[in-house]
Image 1 (cartoon, rainbow, N blue to C red):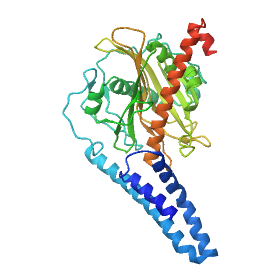
Image 2: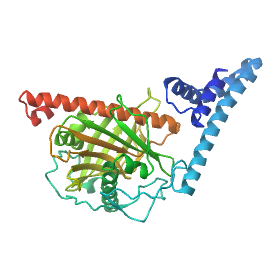
Image 3: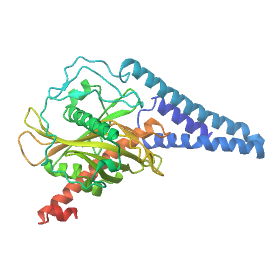
Image 4: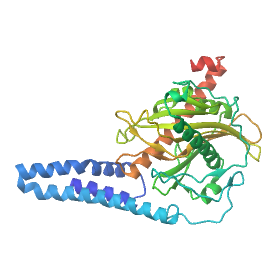
Length: 388
């Protein structure tokens, strides 16, 4: 009976009948998944030791397996529908003009070879500073020469993907709510008492692209330094186990490694990623200045995987920090773009719940770090002293 009830929760959640991601539903989903192998073992045991209980255990196990199978069938149907219609089936096609800050090319190309989905390639009309050395980014590299860890062909792929990520994050990061909805994004439940606004769009492979934004009462240069400088970022971001720059690829491009913490009480285990990352600064037509740190997952033959970590895959994602148009130094908007395929066997809904949880934790930790750093600087300490 318990197995059947838990399986029913899984079925209801995955069929979309239950939209809220409340604790009781999460418990039901978790129990349903964990009871699949348990019920099978119980069925075998009861058949051997106590045959009169076999029918009850069989019913529970078959219900759990059937619920899981139907959830997977629904996910496959969603993928097929998305591939036929070019996006999530719930999104209505629109003829709205693209964001005025970016000229989007007509071609829409997806990376089909490995099953991932790319954002449309974009040609930006905004001037970039690809070789700027004054972006306020500090980092330390494990290897000074990228050829120590990657091949020439891999490095060429890294540079191409980093350039694609740069355009992608500026396209999404500088879009307002109306522009996001014109691109197929839908509002999600906000985090941190409504301070963090979240939009999402389901891509053709079923993975969601997330757009989270929050206005913080701190200078843009201050937030940018703490986000884009890898050694600083690793110190305060409690959602990552490891984060470091592997090797430089150009003046503003590097290869980074990230290992994320487990979430949902360990149900979503640690994931790791190799990212080709590029940092840049652009001035928007309305006078605002936008800093971006964008990247994509890339293969690295010299490290196919690590124990106790599942290798995930990120499409275009990263951070955009936007300073006010009036040049004031009192606040900034921090945008986080996420498109993560975390792999593994868990339900997509559980994965998405983990991502929204991470978003809330990230902004809480960032605001806390910026406040702590500001207090340290007001006390007469320098940035270098604080970093040490």
